[in-house]
Length: 427
Image 1 (tube, rainbow, N blue to C red):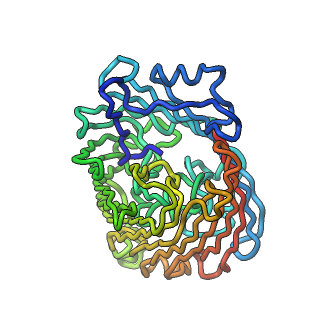
Image 2 (image 1 turned 45 degrees about the vertical axis):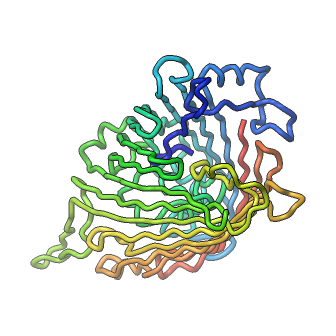
Image 3 (image 1 turned 180 degrees about the vertical axis):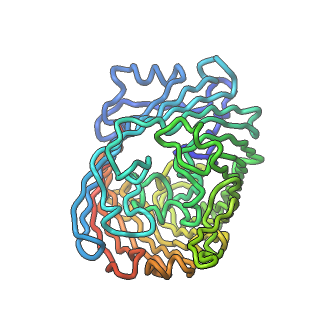
């Protein structure tokens, strides 16, 4: 799950080149990670030549059983094709990697019917389109990464910010762990953190356990555009430090970040909305937020010698653990005062199904009280519960059952109960 703070881990072997590790695509159906296999060895050959790609189709069916704006059932899906050109392995440019990601959407979701603050279905919430219309094709990532050394590098191009707040048990893109956006990112980032945006940044890895990233990108989304029109509409500067450690030999980690937006156009919610009898919408060009998350394994049923990859959106080890995420934001421009989410998750709950994953979480966002929220009868809190269980039908196919209890944004809308099924297939 590439993101603004997840640079690739360069291979340590001096005998062979390449930033991305080699992988095998073949094997029996119940063993291989890719449903279509190795295509007669051609896919393995491409990987060895430096070209690695994935084809991921995620389908979601959800039903609003009660509450919300209306009771409905909605089905939709997203097709993602990320392609990596390992220029180092190809012998073109040492330490270089080029990534392109295309995304397509079809169908619809229950996001509007629930009337909640953040999406109940993140799979179909991004890339953002008007009215959740079908999306034939969007290039959401077009990024060049260059290592200057094993510890230092930079990236530039069109980048994806979702996944920047990486967490072992509550991360990803809504297709592997929790479906709800509240468990994938802090809600305080919503007004300045687009899904896809042109930008650039640097990363520093002083050790295998620590990654420091600083980047700048447009504050407005460019999922379905080239991004040049958004360059003069405000910028976001984001700096994060991610660390891994061991607590009584059990893996854990945390992420701390600060974001500052400038040259933008944010509503000053603490300003004067009525001036000399006339309606006035005050604005501010700056805003900020800070967020933190932590994850910790409580038990591990296998050798935990390998480093956990918190950016891949999966629970790497068989065991259980907890997660927590918190954020706070600028009182003048951000309608969210603070946000908090926490829960338990893991992999291999039953010994007979070692690769199944599960999670249960609670999230809350505190809404600032002001003239706008009072006028539109906006509730001062937004809360939700989500529980999921994902069956590993095969290494390439996952079937997830999900249940959510969602507190709508408006006081006049009743609490929504949503049940869902998600099918993710990696071809």
